[in-house]
Structures are given as structure tokens and as C-alpha cells.
Amino acid sequence: MKDLITSISVLILVFFILVSAGAQEMRIRKPAVAGQFYSDEEAKLSNEVESYLGKAPDLKLQGEVLALIVPHAGYTFSGAVAAYAYKAIENKPKKTVILIGPSHQFRYNYISILPRGMYETPLGQVPINEVLAQRFLDFSDKIRTHPLAHYGEHSLEVQLPFLQKIWGNEFTPLEKNINWSGPQSTSKVSAGEKGDSLTGFTIVPILMGSYKWDMVEILKEAILNNLPEESFILIASSDMSHYHNYEEAAAIDKKSLGFIKRFDIQGLYNSIERGQCEWCGAGCVLTIMEVAKELGADKVRILKYANSGDTAPPWLRDKERVVGYSAIAFYREEKTEKVRKEEGKLSDLDKEEQRLLLEIARASIENALEGENIPEFQVKSDGLKKLGGAFVTLNKSGRLRGCIGFPEAVLPLYQAVSQAALSAALKDHRFPPVTKEELPDIEIEISVLSPLEKIADVNRIEVGKHGLVIRRGIYSGLLLPQVAAEYGWDRAEFLERICEKAGLPRGAWRENAEVYIFTAQVFHEKKR
Image (tube, rainbow, N blue to C red; front, side, top):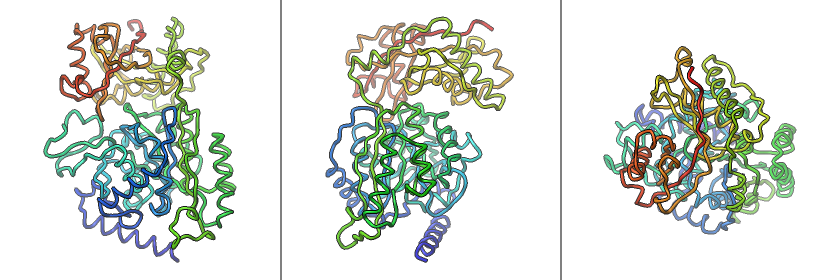
């Protein structure tokens, strides 16, 4: 009866939000649980989150955190646990957060993404990465938009104040006529224009209506086939066991955490199916584990576990009916600089390996244009299986037709080439998608990148040998080594051009920007 009343209340709340906001205003998703799950006053909420973060230890994970599991109850119950997860990434900001939560109020056999606008909390507004959200929506008819599910759902909303506190929240309300279209429009809307500025991160808000394995596989493939070009992190919003007594809950959750520690995804799913493990966001947890593993996560850290029998204030504590909470990180272990360079170093590819990568790039594009799945490429070369950064450039009649890639090693080289080829052909926003008719006239060029090396002295840049990456705040840009040589730039012009590519003013490389150099092995198809 209580659940029924809650559901009706949420539906009424959503109805009034929809009616009062109007079509234009609905681009701003207003907070649904401020004043219930957390304070609705900016100062109080800010102090509350800062207090939780201040009490959480800095566990100093030695590596790149790819994914997190974070609880989503009211802050009084789970805020202290959630803080452990956010403390672990406090000094490692990402540009895009792929935020996945369960739908509590609605059940549906698909995945829902809110594709545009902003999420608002008392701390400000967070833009949706509309470009990436649309790519996910286009990937499968099982990924759709269910607005009502988003406007009353708390599982994503409660994560935002923590993210806003650790990564900054400089965003102020946009005028209604400004159309935010994700990170790729940052060069078109400058900080301070019309009184607005851009936040340090964007989100893709995803709600799963089912935890079943087919939904997990669809979302996993959507993410892996549309990896953001900017830095990103996956966050699964989920509590654990519900409403058992303290000892029973601890035993159930211990079993779940055992599967997590062993990275046994299938074992966890089977135990959830049998009712032996409980996660309200089971599908979200399984999805981020699958993706993190594909991206090379080799370490799992249980940052904190507790249940409401531990965390609730004395007057709310009921050890006969508790809910479990955990903060968990999945990351790639950080090697010593010497080991990292040695393992990340890609030996020059031989002619056969080059030929195979070019075939993989073309086959990936051809299959996509035919509406077929990308082939399961059989690769025997250890060099092509090693994680590697790569860019694929498409040229037609000597003119650029698309160029996208991965600056850093997040995928095996042959997979990076396959995905970069697809993106260069179909998702480079500077050009219309390549058509089946013009593909025979397109020449494919592949650049296999060395690991990025951060430099303090720009005099180290050798034009024609080095490519450049620049990063400052949410802005970043990359130029391949052959670009500077092709246009005849000197070092000074190369630096100015990389600033422009990143959407930064010329000369920005002198002002708190990070500059990286890399080399590339470049090869291309013979004239067709």
C-alpha cells in the first residue's frame, strides 16, 4: 500500500512538472527529490556533501578509474558510503559521465535515455551530452526515451551534487534560445557569452527498465561502439539487498561482493537470477562491469560497504529491516613509468599487419553501410591485440572526408581501428555520413599512435615528427604529425593551431594548459 501511494505521488508530481514547465522549459529536468533525499537549500546541500567527502579517506587508487558503483538512497542513509567513491575520483576529472540507474517507478523492456537539455540540482545545472546520447539512441531500437521515467527518478539525480562538488559547477542558467548540443559545440559558445559558462562535465542519463542479460548486452555494445572522444567514466547507481535483518543482509551482500572482487560477471548475474544476490540496479552494475572489463580494467576495489543498520541516525535505525550500500571502483592498474612505456610501446607494424588493419577499417565501414553487424575479426598478431591509440583518416579526391580516433590506448589496436573507421565515416560532425556509392572513391589512412607524453618545454616539439594534444578544463584537441608537415607550419604556428582545434584562443598553450606530444606510424591504402 505504501509503495502504491508513493508511485501515485510521483506520478502526480511529474504531471504538475510537465504542465507547469511548458515545452521549452522541459529542457531543464528539475530536481524531483530535493528536500527529501538531500537538502533543497544550496548552502546546506553544499555543506552536507563537503562534510561527507571530508570524512571519507583518500584511498589513492594507483590507476585510471574506469567505472564506479555508488548507492542512491537518501544522503542520511547512503551519503557517507557514496562519498568514498567520489573521493576516489575527486582529482581525476572526466568530461563525460555515462550515468546508469534503475527505473524505480516504471518497468519497461528497453533502455531509456533523456537525450537533451540539463539536469538541475540546488547546486546548479549539468548539461546532457546530446551528441553521445543521440548516438546511443540511434544504436538500437531497444534504446528509447521515456521522459516520465526520468522526471520522477532519484537514482541518477542523487549522484549529481557529489559530481558537482568534486568537479566544479560553473554552469548558470541558459537563455531559452540557446541550444546546448554537447561538448562539440564548446568552440561555438564561449565562457561568459550571454552571461553563461560551461560546467566541467556533461552526463548521459540512462535508466534501465530491466536487468535481463539482453538489455545488459545491448547497452554494453552501444557504449563500446560509441566511446566518447573525450575522457569519460561509467557510474552505476545501485543499492544492494533490501529489507532483511542486519545479519541476513550482510551475508547476502558478502556473496555479491565476492563475485565483484573476482570480476565474475556471469556468476553474479546467475546468483541475481536465483535470488541469492540483490541489487536494485542489477543491470546497471552488470553493464559497467562488462564495459570496464572490455576497456582493460584489471583491478577492483571495494571502497566501502555498510547498510542502513550502520549508517542511519539512531532515531531511524532499524536492524530488522536494512538496505545495503557499497562504493566500488574498477580501474586499470598504474604501472611504473618505465613499465608503462615498455608495455605501451607499439613496435612498428610490418606490412602484413598494416594490410590487415586497412582491411579491418574498410570492412567495418562496408558492413555498417550494408546494415550488417561488424564482423568478429580473427586476429592472430600479438601486436594488433595490444592496447593502442589510433586515428583513421578518410580522403576523397585528395580532400579530407572524415577523421576520428582514440588518442590513448583504451582498446586493442584492431578494435580501435575498427571503431575509429566507423566513426570517421558516419559520425564526424564536420561532414555528412559517407554513402555506399562513394565508398569506392575513398582512401583510408591509419595513424598508429605512441603513448602520449606530457611536456613542460614546447621546444621539444619536432614538427613533422610529433603530433600534439592540448587539454585545458573541458577543452581538448589533437593534431596528427602529418598535419603540420602538410601545411608547412613551424612550431609556433603548430601550437596556435592546436589551440584553435580545441576551441581555445590562440596562445592558450601558455596559460595552464597541458601539452602532450606523440609520434605516429602512418600508412594508407594504395590508390584505388
